[in-house]
Length: 108
Image (tube, rainbow, N blue to C red):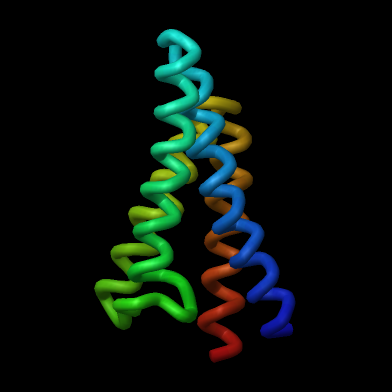
């Protein structure tokens, strides 16, 4: 079951990258700025996750700091889902994150 929770957590992380890029691309600005915003957000999220959240992070966070990072990370993803696809998509995403978190806590 821990493999399932790991796969779900990974898919949710990828979902945050995807929706952050999508949110940036759907802004009402010229195309060049939309491309820069979309790619810049994905790069920013990748840097933050790579430095602090990934299993092989350069500076891995633990305890309350890790919980705060995940809350901000998946909270931003949920907000981006709400802004691009609506409240229902955001609720599904948040529910999947809560399920993933519960599975991780249950099997660690």
